[in-house]
Image (spheres, one colour):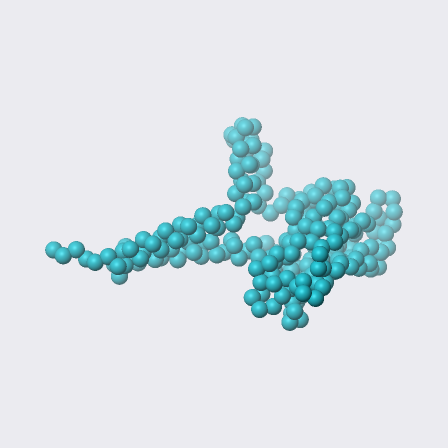
Length: 236
């Protein structure tokens, strides 16, 4: 194997790792949108991918905060899945507006009906309405995903590089990875700032497209490697 072939193989391997990392990070329970305004009633969608090749997801629980409870919690019926609002007594009374709240909905539980379990490669969308949104920085919505073999995956990590990150609803805090448009506007002007924000949003909102583009690059490099691997040396 000549030097060119070795270099091409190394480059292809590096690009493969680059695409695998971001796509793997996408496979976790999340919410969309991840932002809301204080006082609003937000309609969010809980996105649940099935990560097991052998087992199916048959139960999902979304745990709601007890220190800043939502007084209005409603679910949108999903065919094949039963939903239950679990009400509990709060650890301490909480003032919401002018009312003192002592109990609230503290979790939503979805259970699959027979034959409707979430299989390999499938994505479950669970819309819910929450409100009024508290005037805080962010709210962590811990999720638990149960599989047909009884195993439970807890999406509760709050550190930046958590392996099983919890869904977070950002309110007055800036979402992770958000870029301040003011700094861009000062540097480039209003029009450039808007264009920059649009480009950044487009890039971040379509990681799959980026992944497919990188995959095409990997395929092209692979073709080069094959071509040069089978190329016969020129006879002098």
